[in-house]
Image 1 (spheres, rainbow, N blue to C red):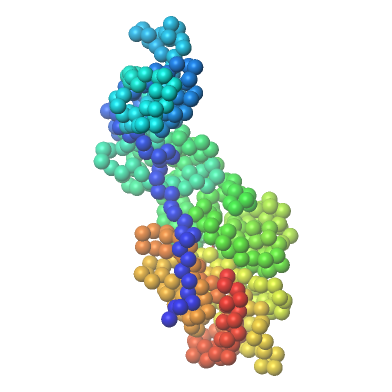
Image 2: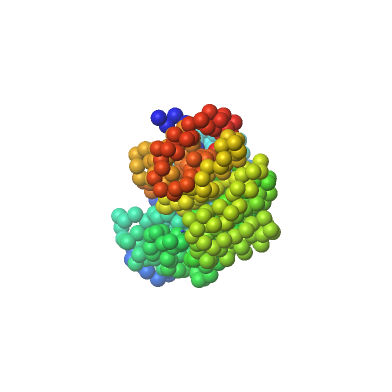
Length: 472
Ligand SMILES: C[S@@+](CC[C@H](N)C(=O)[O-])C[C@H]1O[C@@H](n2cnc3c(N)ncnc32)[C@H](O)[C@@H]1O
């Protein structure tokens, strides 16, 4: 039944799940002082601790070569020197042993002289370094700890310290769980400390079901400046993250759609946001009609068009999507369809866009005179997004598009899996050539049977078109 529906899984964008910024390696090394457990105001000094680590003594004449050979077993920690001077029993630098240095080793890999692998042992022999391990008293400070170690030390024992955050310019955007909320200010500060470039951490305080798809958020740490500068696929955007929609996990999808466009095509972006389809499309030489209901998105869209010097290619609107289709789009469509350049309609409001497809029903009024009938009319290509929680997500989104059109799309569309949004929720994109029988009809009500019948003679030429352009 759905033989022509292609599910493309390759571009699933994986969520950033871990709060940690470095891989977990030597979690056993740091045994946090009990005093930090339950801390809600960050006291960095309280995290300091002296630990005993293995070390090997190396003559300075072969230091660089030996350090290179022992790279895999050397201690690696943020902000930590792994090659140190030797000290005498008073803790002072021992100048009598000046021609040697100590290389600190990872206690997870090296516990005794026998722990070296064959390659490392051979290198030590070749450079004349005795395989003797000594203990070194190392002072670990807050700077040398990873965010996960700090949070594991602070949060109640046995509770999960990981949580997702995404980066929007200088802003780290978190979605903390209830048990983490008492520690939210501290968590925010740790994220700032451990992630260069992050100067503001916010926590989402509502679900994204507001009309404009923006989040309510609380600033946990850092500056309260919500105006982010973001580069996506080489294009610069600026916007107030608290007032508009922006999702860094859509960059692959934005790029995928833009790669379908040719210079001179027209792009109709019904739910344009701050411009992640519209601006690159204009950059590619397309004429763009971009609309968003949110006045803030509309302003930032215009700002971004100017910022990227494509404002002359973009005509922007601040309207409801249906009114936009039935107004400015309807006005321009007949002329555009006479041309040879493609028309792409992008509808990225996944919670509702499939329902908005009904705005195309009867958009161009009755069928033109049969003598003027041209099966190769330049019909718009639609890329419409939808969420699905169904087992068969592609069938689900196609069926919902069909309900809006009162017309079967079987055999006429492709479906792309954009990303997995939650364990049982997919974001899909249905692409198809807008059926002629949808655009031309006298009624906007239920005319499914007659329309699907009137489509039949066109099917062969549509199929030919489908094969010629697999991107629809
Ligand atoms: C999911 S965002 C997508 C924005 C952008 N296209 C992107 O890919 O990032 C959906 C956008 O639709 C806008 N929107 C919501 N309801 C709308 C409506 N009825 N008409 C037009 N725009 C609407 C929101 O303000 C939001 O900017």
